[in-house]
Image (tube, rainbow, N blue to C red; front, side):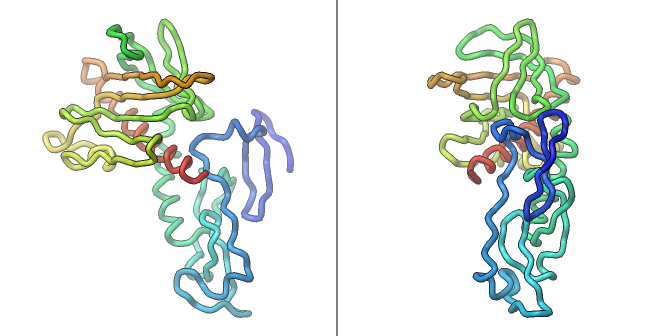
Length: 256
């Protein structure tokens, strides 16, 4: 184990080399813990094709799910940033597909979130709104709102995120009830990651409910896109990325 700058350290685990926060409490909320490997003694055959292991048929553990597979069913080495691996690691076919889908978030959408977008922000039940830039912190732990009066929301304190569309019914994802309600109106805008004019609703805002640190009462934050087409496009891109982030955050909490 060796230390590196910026509060990070290199840790070597049985699965590979990982770059993690010096203080585990400062890990990205999107991260997943390494799974416990199924013990070798309990693995007599591949957990996918059921081929029996032998001297010439070695067993391999998937670094994402921890199950045992033969080389054919666990041959791909794929990047796994959610577990902070430095290099691509061996994964089974099912897990490798999940990791490949998530790579778009880490390669593109996370940059959109960190860059931020302007919104009209309303706090709690106030009828006053202010123009602020909403952005994700570099360590992914906070939602920053920059304006005349800056403030922040810790992602781990968020209880509900709802992405609002230009249709009458909002759709969202609730963490408190541990239920994921996908937006599936007019073609599934948020899941598709794009909008076809005239056929899909447009993401135009977001409702966030959270508990400030040290408090039990839930507070609400509303973000609405600006009036210009340029502001609407920037807000839509940011909201699409935030919808994906909310799904990963939900999965991380379920994984704990």
